[in-house]
Image (cartoon, rainbow over all chains, first blue to last red):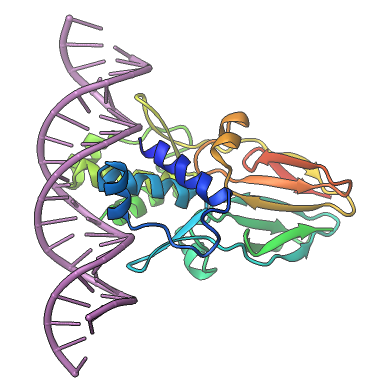
Length: 124
Length: 124
DNA sequence: TGTAATTTGTGCGTATGTATC
DNA sequence: AGATACATACGCACAAATTAC
């Protein structure tokens, strides 16, 4: 059931019914309106958080994540890049939101650069 | 408390005490050994799942994720690439594990390619 | 200014279902 | 058949931070 609620909310987000920055109904409201327990509602929201679709600002509420502007980082000859989920330390130091991967660039000289994936884009 | 348990397990994984492929104690065991409820244990494991550190194969158990070999995809002139968390549809179709982002390559000709981030690496 | 209401975070317990061994 | 183990769903309570009055 929590997946159904997540699907429903995801559709409202991708369709634009819930625009970026808009707030979702509170957990209690969602629970009452859909006849679910707050536990199930929180599971649904946790799913959307892991997908990077919403951010939660306790106790203000839950909001549709706004798409950030993208700066381009160039990949030079001999460089490689990967993406993965950040460690808790990286999330704190780079101020990475939930559901946002990091992009790690391995430079040809052996150095490394780590970026929040929602702030940069790789080019060449 | 679930964060402390997650930290403890994360350390055991990164230190090599729990090697890739090794199984974690069951939720019930972890709960008993640390004097926690199963709810808290599940929260801790959910955190490690979102970080891509462990995979759960119900009802076999929870295992340390093995690092997959990386094939390199080359970025050509005019191409750009980003990373983000996959949609549920992408996760199913590309068989993407939990806590694994996707890398999307936008080719100069307008086409797009989507890969599981733990299977490829970007180069040039 | 201070109090109350709202909202999310965290933790506990319980029960049932399902798949594996 | 039975035990084990994870998934899901319900309930309750209190804490902490923000907002409203």
